[in-house]
Image: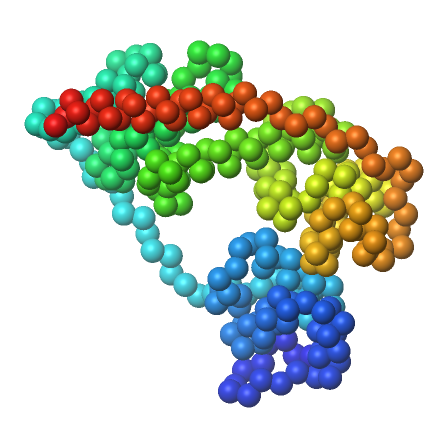
Length: 317
């Protein structure tokens, strides 16, 4: 086996390592190997996590990469803490001529069904002033948090402003600072939520809340582009081998198929040489598509927000 990480200006690999790379027939795997060989870590490649993990799995299968990649010695940039707004700051913001913050407060109170406390106003002003999120994005954030809360705890349940602020910081870190990006983000989360329900049915799992790790697996499979029948096929091979559902093992199967460009059941049957048989009757009928009513309601809500923002801007001018 070759030395994976070799210091110095000259890069060299053994003939055995070269043969293994050629056997993989994967440009991504070869590029990642060179990156690891030259720099000792993968951060220089501007790849998605899914693409990186797929190439890394291929190298590990051939003994060309360690089980754990070295962590680069980088000092994270601390997030700037928000100001400690005083009561006077909030009072001034509410009285400022031409500001749309008062109208924003009024609309958030209407949506939450309560008067905002002093602490609530400071949390809301943190989103508006410190994070500089546009009012329309804040309203979409509030609407999304309300929907999540109601799905978890039932109709009429409302989130705390502290929860909304926490989610707002996540949005800001992800660059969700325009209405278009917020719409795209919410649509993605809504689609993934429907996809999670679909995948649970494919895995013969009764509806239940998913832990974050399970959500991450499903999101990765969705990003890779697998259809329902391919996911079902991977599940049946997993159960055949492990005698029960094993998320990690199934993920390994799907990543191997992804590395070969196999994303449908037909492509897997034609291109995967895995000798392990698939259980009879594996092509389970795909579940019906998710109800499009959620997406329709989301679009209607976004349109109402647009009209509201126009009204708020006119009142503030």
